[in-house]
Length: 426
Ligand code: S3P
Image (cartoon, rainbow, N blue to C red; front, side, top):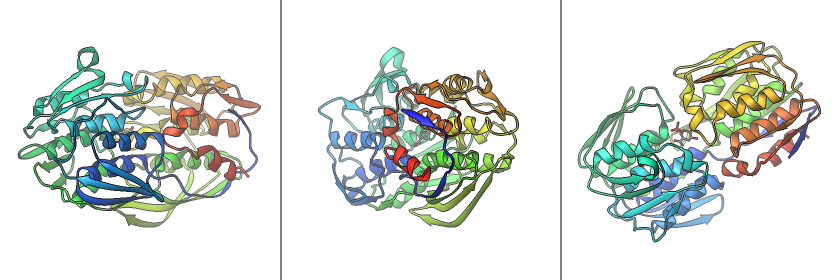
């Protein structure tokens, strides 16, 4: 894919439905008793991996209009899959399923594509094993494929070693099957969609600071879910508007859950022109319109500690933003970025350096020196959707041509990305 510099970027944009919320809707509706409707579902490869997994587990899921009709069979209604479950590129599908299937008394085997098979699963396997599930995985129980035989589970009191919403949600799902009350403690807040959504299905979930308690054994009942727009997909357009000369855009109906808005906090710290309007709540999730304007006078920021989980998926596009802010932006405590769909620290260091940015890769982050005029060149997506989309935005402000080697990964989260981009570029 070849991208050239643009002279304008303006208009209105509605981001695609939220990926994390779409996954969770499929999981919870499938294990609730009765018929649920998921509206504004994200029809992209990752959430479809969750849909296909539950179809393998015997759940009837119909695609209708902008969403799904799910005929849930209750906590104990899943059936042993007849085949290996392919989670594709989706870490959320695999990790949440590991927790859920730990409490289901049959054999399941989970695998995924070559990127997912390199991602560590021991963080989920170990606590599920401790709760009583029988689990084995490749390379000393560290990597997929994972084989799970669900058992009767005991509740767990668990201090999570990393702030990970996938781990937290996996353990909350396992806890639904345990006899008694489980306690899960996070080291820092991560996205809380599971905590917000599960109670609407009747689960007894309580939050107290960083501690979450879940009571096992309560049956879930069907509930409808309306999925908000995905701020992680909107992020590419937010940054494009901030860095393209004269740009101004309005992003409609975007999720602004505070556990996801780290990018907005950073943009404000950098002095970017961003405003949030028309805040409201849908299906327990805060939603708003976001207005962004070209901001030529942004300055560098330090991004570290508790910032990181709140912008974990926005790092690639934030590193591009940093190249357009005056001074040295430092990103620290972000070692988790090495085990995403690609090693995002290494991928962004290589790509930004190729475009002419002065960058330094650190073990747990990056230093980016701005402000730099970018020069188009050949860049790589590393098979990672968020790197591919970041490079497309970089191409819009680079001289000459920016050539991205492979954009097929964009289908995992934002199939309409290039169409939406061309509309705003006029
Ligand atoms: C997600 C959690 C995050 C995020 C991922 C989606 C989720 O992963 O990076 O894209 O839906 O729970 P971690 O839990 O590994 O931080």
